[in-house]
Image (tube, rainbow, N blue to C red; front, side):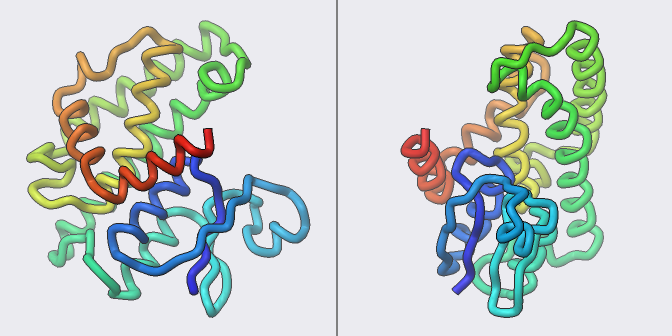
Length: 208
């Protein structure tokens, strides 16, 4: 049986968990935090989560894991069949990773862990995020999903990256993303209605 290593508060762990749930795949959760212990490093060489255990060995990095699960061809597929549309979905995923979630991560300490960021750092992050959201407006569709009329893996990334980033911008930057980025609030609300997300939210609540 597939085993998913990580913990319910991790956004990237939840992207993979949503994939497994949406596909109806059987899996076991192994609750673990990032670790530099030798035993865990033998599974996840950087000590990060998520990590996936398969019959053939271990896999790390969210995008790699999701593509592996997709290639198993079990349950629903959340990439378009058309090669160009598939590439555009992957492009959206990279934009969400690199230009939305990654810059905001620099303020996680300020927002979640009581480690204040300097005004200079906040201004730098805001500038990067403004560029990232502007690019997402040009690239995204929101009709109603980020890549078009059907839900894709890009929406899984969107939910667990943009959803978190809106909290960061509100608290650290006094910036209400919902008021400046059309479609964001509506897409997040739509995705929250999915049974897989309700299951994940219940696990998060229990973990908190």
